[in-house]
Image (cartoon, rainbow, N blue to C red; front, side, top):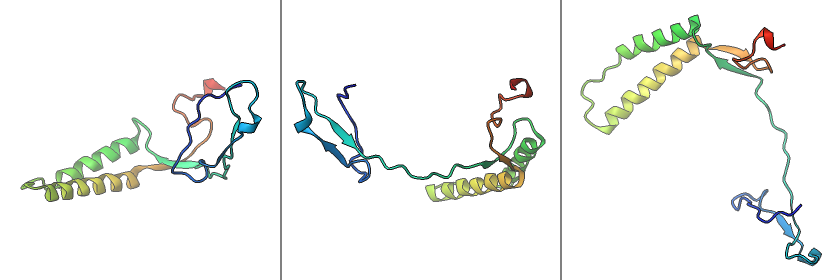
Length: 120
């Protein structure tokens, strides 16, 4: 197999350590190259917070966001600082509604919405 082009990350000391072996070149104009790629242990998340579509939790989440959004004053937004403040408060409303209504779900091979008991 011949690799004509290889992209490395120049800003990464781990992925920019490569070795070219011009003395190992045979009759072709290709030169062998090797690179050491570190393999690290990765923690894979086994659960996440979610709200199922069309569930009671989704309805409660939407109702909570709407009711709290109605209390948010949007009068006199005449500069970018006031707009940023309103946007920040809206983000807080959404985050709080999420915390109040999302449920922790364990991820598995059956976690996809398309999965059903018919699958096996």
